[in-house]
Image 1 (cartoon, rainbow, N blue to C red):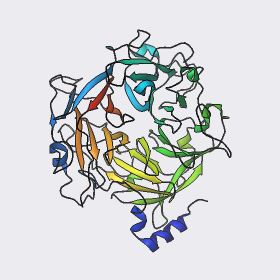
Image 2: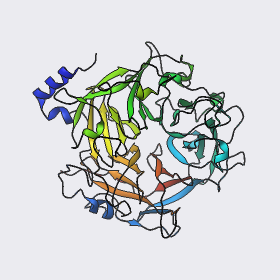
Image 3: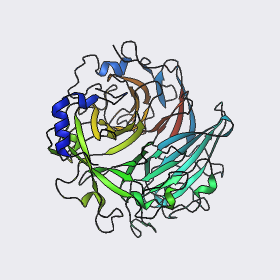
Image 4: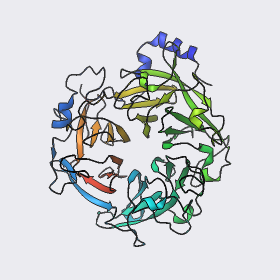
Length: 484
């Protein structure tokens, strides 16, 4: 039964602020530079210096010019486009993006790594190779590789998981041990040299190469600029983000058909119109419709959520996000990474500018499916000086840390970080991208992507998207305690 505006307003009137935070274990309240943050100690000083009794201390510049880390930490390059090779002898593809880890055979770790490559193959020096039997559209340059790292990290093997897809940005790990890779591109056959329609989600099995043959899009999940997806482990719903503007993108929920059972390969066997795809519609505690998530200017803001069915999920004539009239759905600029934990979905809106009612430099929301509420956990103000080390903007891929809180990959302007955020809102640095792909006069640093821990929690994997480098970070990890 949907949560009506009247029900949400009544609940809010009875319980006040309690409805905002109750039941969201592990949630985040504020962040350094957060709008309306009320803790003077949660400022940029914590990011630069590690704070007081939490984090891992200041970052030490890397003599090799790749990754600055705290003292006691080290990294190892796992794959490097143009340097490392696949088992076929071809180059590791470029533009690393979303990543997931899985337990492999004989103590190995398997990683599925997206490659965000858009447009025809001739545009890229290192596209995903067209491995026989694993190609969706031979004209497209993107896809995924599977990386196997030995128990002691001394041997790496990489092979193609899927090829011929476009702009594979983020995605999501499934509870049944596969990866859902998302196309952030809606080129039709005949556009930009493509021979098939794009804008879909595909399933990649890191354990069974045969399962990946003859790739088939999961059309039931819709055709739009997909970013990330998570699976509700209890109810079976899939939640998906859309990174788009003009108008801003949407948050979606797919409900499987009755009696459908999830499992390896079962999504690709669904009919194109199976289940129900809906978009989020939010309203505040007074029952007022919220047109855009950027309207929230204070952490702890809670919106009730209803879901509105998508008229034409395959967007045959009109893009999905344009199929709704004013007042029907709630939009958000650059809806990016997601992670399922604490009984719900952490959801990122990377930044908002002129496409949105209110400007910001990053939000992290938490959707609680039991309460049908969306709560703002992190809000970063507009970064006035992106070139300054210590300032934050543009959160993108995220993961929940086994040591508490979130780990966030920065995709903003200027300096790029991996940073942690504790349950009470403080942040601390984990890494800084020291690889300058610009010039000495005009430095440029690529975004971090694909942040994820190994299954045993001992290694943090992350990518530098350009030129495409996967690193494994190890060190004296410890639980990050909240104050009080």
